[in-house]
Each structure stands twice: as structure tokens, then as C-alpha cells.
Amino acid sequence: MSKLKYKPKQRLKLNPPIIILVEPQLGENIGFAARAMLNFNITSLRLVNPRESWPNKQAISTSAGAIDSGKSNVSLHNNIEEATEDISYLLATTARNRDLNKPVLSPIEAAESLLHAQIKGMSTGIVFGAEKSGLKNSDIIKADAIVNIYSNSKFSSINLAMSVLIISYQWYSRKIEFIESGKLPKQKNLKKNSANKKELNFFISRLLTLLSDNDFFSPSEKKQSMVNNIEAIFTRSNLTPQELRTLHGILSNLIKS
Picture (spheres, rainbow, N blue to C red):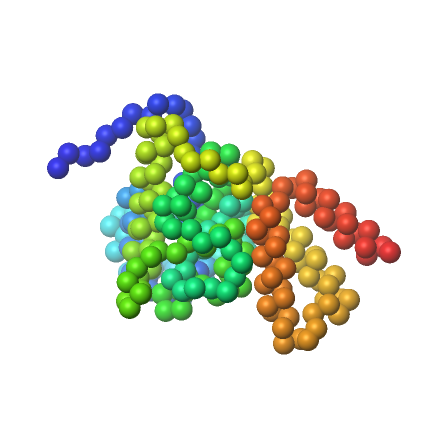
């Protein structure tokens, strides 16, 4: 079987997406995920509170050299906010239907969305949840869109590393198609200079503090769902740094008055 060969028709820097594993439980899955990533030229792996200690022998052995060769960059983070603060376009994977007002993409649509963002120079990332429970709603709400890997409804449990493999492959193969043809479907949602998650999270935190100080979250048992809804509004808006500065100005004016 001959290997796929292609010659780029244009010089275009497309930085690969950053893969983020939130609370992964098994070192073996981290290693397999790193191996799958490197197969498709994705090298940045961020771990949020892995259950096993790091460095991890099982992860290194199952990575087939992806981790210990120095070809992959693996970093540890305390929470999802810290792991995504430099990312402007973020996708979150889930196998379950979520009652969240977010666009739901197939792996192919996700790959195209990532490429659109990367063409505009945006830093991109994909978040995967723990093997047993997946991502929490409070994690997914921070993403711009949800990726759903369609599978057998009677057996939809997909191994963590396999999920990473599927998304990584779709991104890489779609990138090759784009480089060969120079064409991608138009996508009007993404702005060229979207704020990163650190900037957006700072504004949302400031807004939520102001609302809390003014007893907005009532009744208290509905606070989390209200917070999720508010956060979803601003995440979905794809705000620029200038738009955030305007919103900060509005908050400052309200505080003064």
C-alpha cells in the first residue's frame, strides 16, 4: 500500500491544536493518546490533574517514544482555566447529550472549524474528559463548541485514546485536503482576533462577582445553572479583546454608579 504524498501549494502556517486531558485516570491512556497525536503531527499535550503521578512509566511505555523522545510537549495544569488560558478557540468532546446552548459538531466539522481558526492565526485546543465520567458541564461551558463522535447508541463508550485518535486524524486529513485544494467551506462565526480564554474568563469572573454582590443569583439552588447560562452567552459570542474592554468599561461604570 503506497503512502499518501502531497506537495503544499502555498506556504501557510497552521499550528496544530493543543490536546487537553482533564483528570485522566490511566497512564496507559495518556501514552496511547500521545502516540495517536504524534501520528498526526500534534505535539502539545496538557494534563489537568491526572490521577497517577507524573512522569508516569505506563504512559511513557505505551507512547511508543512519543513522550520520551522529546517530540511531544507534555505539561501539567491545576485546572481547565489554567490549561486553556492562551487558547482562543476551544472545542470540548462528549459522548452524551448535554442541555447546553452550544453548537454540536461532528469530528469532520470540528476539524474544519479548527482549521478556520488556525488560518486566522488563533490558538486552538480540544478538551477530553476522564475515562469514566467525561467532562463536567462546568468544563464544557468554557468551550466554543461541542464535538460529538457519533457511534452505536447501544454501545457508545469510546476509549479516551481512541477519541483523541479520531479527532487528530480528522484534523490532519482535512488539513492535507485543504493544502492540496486551497479551499475550505466558508465559516462566518469566527473573528480574526478573538480574545483568549484567560481574557474571557477574567471578564466573566468579574461579571459574576458583581452579580453575586448584588444578590442576582436567587434562588441559590439555581445559581450554578444561571452561571452556566451566563458563561455560555459570552463564550458563544466569540468576543474580541476590544469588545471585552468595552464590556469591562460598562462594568466599571455600573460599579461607580
